[in-house]
Length: 298
Ligand SMILES: Nc1ncnc2c1ncn2[C@@H]1O[C@H](COP(=O)(O)OP(=O)(O)OP(=O)(O)O)[C@@H](O)[C@H]1O
Ligand SMILES: [Mg+2]
Image (tube, rainbow, N blue to C red; front, side):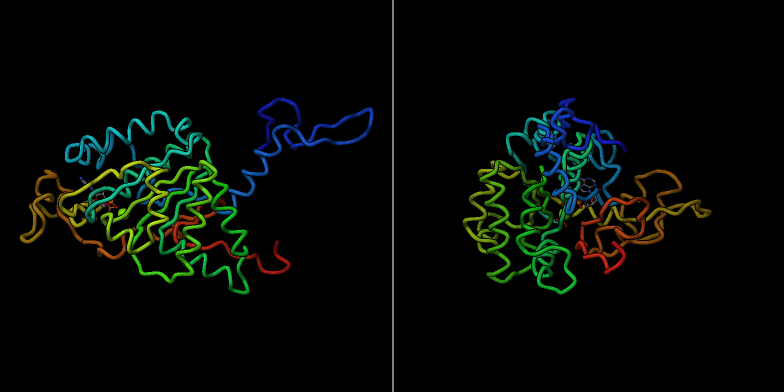
């Protein structure tokens, strides 16, 4: 795709040519261009499971029925996403397992991507592993380089905060990321199963306090774990009829042949393999660290 100058001053290269003096000056669009390039190293896309998420498709109507104020707040955020990101305002979701936190967070990230904003999406365990991996010989980025890039994206989406115990060193790096984004007015979207006390114990008061300032009060989603019923994998074209004894009532409620479940996906495998649909050249970072290209291939 050919780059276009948003200020209509350069040819998209980030430099304005002064023909008479035969020199090139940085264009007014260059800082934003550099920031985007920096962010591109960590920017990712929506994991496949959540790619079709939208307000008018399940499970959103169901989530809205159980938590109307939360979905209303998400709708308001999405409707003014550009403004919210410019102000560095974020959102965080707290609550029980399988209640739609990641779904709603992905809806926000998707809206940000559609608004042409740079977004990095990580589960916290993966993000922390990446911070540790910067010390590997084949790491693409230094620790500072990685943190710098994580702070350059317009929206940092961190999923599953509190899912693992971490060393003080790693938590200090997490603090640095949150604090830098806080100081730079950069938005964060975050999900966690932990309540306030447990979260503070897990990632520290200083980090949590900044999250409150960036995101306001967390949006709470409590209720039954909907994953077991949602993860029933539907048969392509079934020949059997009726619902097998022992399957969840929701399978019967679906009311058509697809209701006959053939497989239940294990709870501990919530996301589709991000490598399985690697059909374009966008970096996949939800669960994968960027790697330094092998010598001679870059
Ligand atoms: N209220 C709901 N109604 C119907 N399906 C739902 C609802 N909430 C979540 N789901 C479905 O349950 C599954 C899990 O949703 P999601 O990943 O958003 O949960 P979560 O709150 O992030 O869970 P966890 O705390 O384990 O990370 C998804 O398949 C989603 O479509
Ligand atoms: Mg989740």
